[in-house]
Image (cartoon, rainbow, N blue to C red; front, top):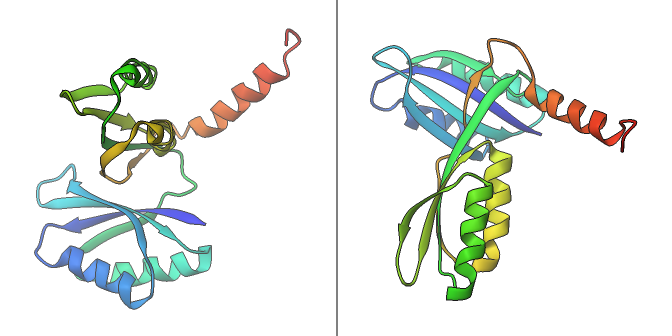
Length: 179
């Protein structure tokens, strides 16, 4: 199962190296990693996605807590969160395909950030599912380059799980009296 960990660390040289070293020593691959300043000066938030069972992830979290400069570690996998990712994707469309790509961009609220006679570059922001969907649709248009940030996440203070709401509304719309 894929887990999402949110780690608060002090901004000190070598912190990320110690964390990645811990993962490497234990034979874990980090699927996604995003690091940036947190809400307090001198503190950074690391968001990472890692494969593993619950027991293994618990052990990994205990090991992370022991590292120097690590302030907090949370497994937010089953916590209602806001998740976002950024992708830049450059495609090389034929002239007759440009309008189809622009339509996809419009549907997914992507921005055209560069255009030339040989390429079109889109900026897509959203949850990982949206990023995956756009990428899958654009594969047919000769993808030249992709750059993705990795997932970032913050816990929803409202504790409302929007994924459950989506599933509930899909269930209700599919089983309504008017279908």
